Image (cartoon, rainbow, N blue to C red; front, side, top):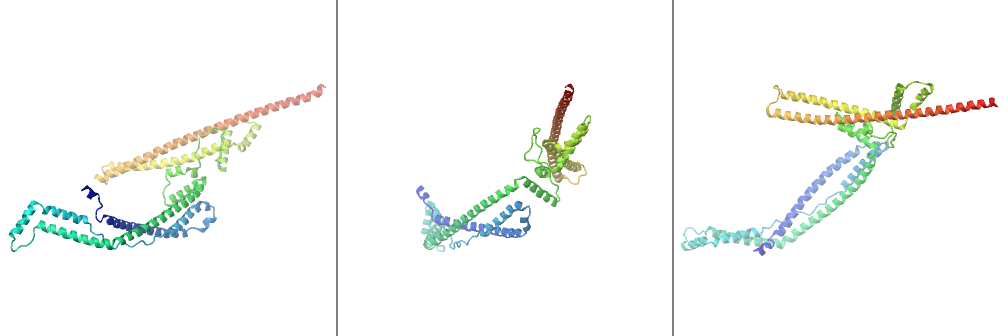
Length: 433
């Protein structure tokens, strides 16, 4: 019995081939639908390409937009080159009946027929023989029908194997080869597209990864927010801080310059006037040499002082944005607290489950706003610390420069005193002679 079960069942090989052929047909239909979608996308992409302004390539944004436009052209070229040839026709032959079902039916009918009770019934039918009923017993009829069905299936399978097997195998092999060629070509095209896009992406990253690229991304996002009448979020302003407010202040050692940051002319003038004003208010006895020095001080502001002043100004601007965002969230929190108060009051318009759902939504919103307020307060604290550290550095820089100037004045006075003494000696010598 185990040996019989280990053998292939009749008809299963061809059944598998025809099922797989049907699966390939369904898969090809899916691929064709995918290509139809890409065709519609290709038409839309061509229409979009026609809307490009030819003056872009002659303007200053050429390096910015050319990688993306090249990606469009690449994608259009690859989509136009992709085609799927018509595959082999579907199988016209039907699936032959399996011998297994009729064989099992025959075995079952035979077991029922050879039972002792069935044999007794058949013997009585042969012995008595009613004159008006010549129908065989049910189990006998069932067995004979099983034999007839088995013979009919064997005859049908013989004809099918002699005429249909080769056609089924040819159709299945043809469809499989067509699909294999198409998938190889499709995979190759995908690989080419990936490589081409990777090169274009590297070109884009070489442009967008620089400092101006951050500004362009921030400008585009801000334009979209303004066009849709949406208030730019604090997270957006924080992520695009480099474009809107310059680089974030960094802790640095006094007198340590920056090789990648150059303050603007307006920032330098502001820092100069700030330091000049501080020196004017903190000055002691004013002498003529000191006044002339203060008049020259704005032109002698060191690079470290300029950077510190610029960082303080930018940190102050960023702190103002944080305070504005904090005020906005506090207003929102007040509004939702009023809504929650109204929902908890006896005169609430909603009752039952809708009221509970509304309260839950308001509480979730309040929790979210509290998190944002906490984050903004944390940033405000950091910015205040940055401003304080910058002011301290400015004061240290000013004190260092004041000491340096005082040392230079003392040295100049000493040199002047030595010159006076030498001149006095030179004047006295002729008289002594």
